[in-house]
Length: 332
Ligand SMILES: Nc1ncnc2c1ncn2[C@@H]1O[C@H](COP(=O)(O)OP(=O)(O)OP(=O)(O)O)[C@@H](O)[C@H]1O
Image 1 (tube, rainbow, N blue to C red):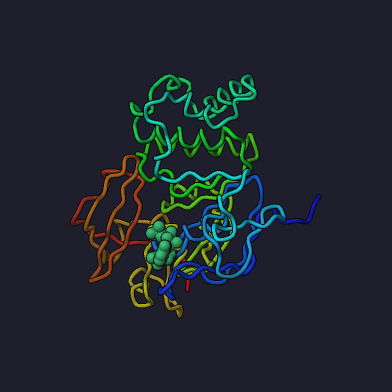
Image 2: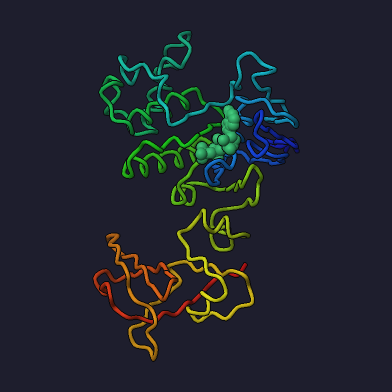
């Protein structure tokens, strides 16, 4: 096997003119093929900048990007940016032909020289993305989520090696979102395509990605697989990005029965047990948020609030006095 990395950035940086704290600081990274790598970070952390540098839509100030050993040139060096083996889908579906049928929008991406291949490839992608029923509809008559499916179909029908997704599900409602996420995972499994995506949604990256890259203020602060990162985030920033967790200082931690010398503790809501029988019931249920098969409770003690999950909807009521037992926590 070749030792050439699949995708590699070496000391790549991009600072936007007049904005020292913008863009991406000197960054090294390597991305493995056949996986979904998600870039996460708070707003303005440099996610889109990194994606555009990898795709060749931006030229780095310094450093180089390589795809299978081949240099990726940005728009300052190359007239038409991008690479034949790569496609990008964003939340905007502007390049769809609204008045043409779904089928024609997809087939138009393929050369007219081999009509049989054009037919077969279009059919295959319609099947992969569960779109057969809409093949003859005009794009103008589709919902936002369906248009997004067409945009993804157009990108993958040419069988790129790398698919870049820049928050493509932003405008898509939850039920559509989950279907699309599932289909993309399936396509990665079946075809071995590499997906590099940017997302704001923790649930999305945890369920979709094989690898995560965490960006903070233009710097990579952590990389790894979602399960390990969820269980043991190396820093508070990552914990906050991936979970709706409780972050307590030492005094607040003490209220929950944790005596620690650490500056902060992180408590995941699912690691707190509510006790109704206890000598001191110091917490009051301030809010009960019904979530279907579970409830999220906001408990309060003085000025401290704690988010807790209850798997028994209806068991607790606002105003109730309870105690807690924290089974697990992280210290920082
Ligand atoms: N064309 C530009 N000109 C000047 N500054 C820019 C430009 N594009 C991005 N920036 C700045 O660079 C920083 C990183 O932006 P970027 O869009 O990469 O972040 P992001 O993590 O993708 O943000 P978001 O999640 O809000 O889309 C931000 O401070 C942003 O204001």
